[in-house]
Length: 304
Length: 42
Image (cartoon, rainbow over all chains, first blue to last red; front, side, top):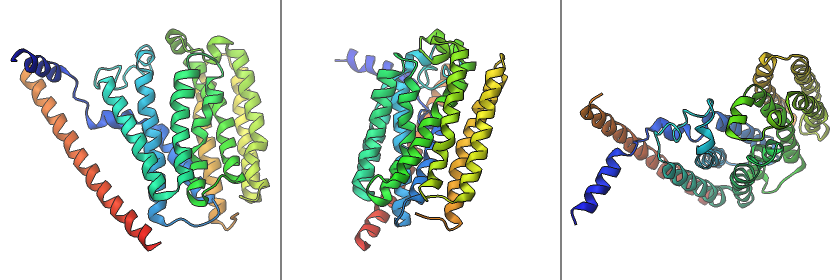
C-alpha cells in the first residue's frame, strides 16, 4: 500500500509546474491577436445588429477557439518543435509543461468556446468555429503539414475562417462579404508563410517538414509567392466591388497590393534572406492595414 | 539552485496558477450572468 502513493508522489513532485505564462504561450497569443482582429472586422462589417455583450462573447469565443487550436497543435507538433530553433523554447519541448496538460487544456477550451458561441450567440457561428478548430488540427496539423508542400495553401483556410465566424455571429449565415474576407486571408497566407519559410528553410528541413523552399527550392517558392501577391490585387478589391467598402478602400487596397507585389519582386531578385524577412514583416502589416481600412471605411458610413 | 529553492519556486508557480484560475472562473460567472440578462431581455 505504501509504495503506490509514494511513487505517484515522486512523479507529481518531479513533473514540471507550468506557469500561467506557459498556458498563455501555448495559446499562440500573436496568432490569436490577428484572428481576433479579423474576426472583429467580420462582425462589424456584417449587416445587422448584435448586442455589444454578445459581440464581446463572440470575439472571446473566436479568440479562445483559436487559442485552443494552437494548444492542440503544440501537442501534436511537440516532436518537430523540439528540432526547430524557432519553436524549441515552447513550453512542451522546453519541458515546462507536460504534453497531456496542453492537450487537455486545448480540448477543454475548444469545447467551451464552441458551446458558449452556440448557446449565447449563434449556432451557425458555433458550427463554423468548430469547423475551424477541427480543420486546423486534423486537416492542417495532422494530415497536411508533414506530407505536402501545399500544407499552408490548404491549411491556410483555418486562418481565414475567423471573419466568416464574426459575420455569421451577426447574420446567422454566410454572406458574399464573409466569403470575400475569407478569400483575402486565404490568398494572403501562402506568400506570408513562404516568406518565413524561405529564411527558416534549414529548420524545416531538419524537422522533415516539406515546406515549399525545402521541396521545390527558393526560386520556385519566390515565383509562387509573386503569383499569389498578384492574385491578391482583385481579391483584396472584392469588398469594394461587392459594396461592403467604398472607393477609398478600393484605391488603398490596390496601392497596398502593389506594395506587396513589390516586396515579392524584391525577394525574387535578392539571393540573401534579408528581403524575405522584410516581406514577412510587411505581409503582417498588409493584412492589418487592409482590415483596418475596411473598418475605417465602414465607420465612415459605407455599410452593406 | 537547491532543492528547497526549486520546491519554493514550484509552490509559488502553482499558487499563481490557482489565483489565475479563480480569476477566470469569477470572470466566467460574470460573463454568463451578463449573457443571461441580455438573452432574457432580447
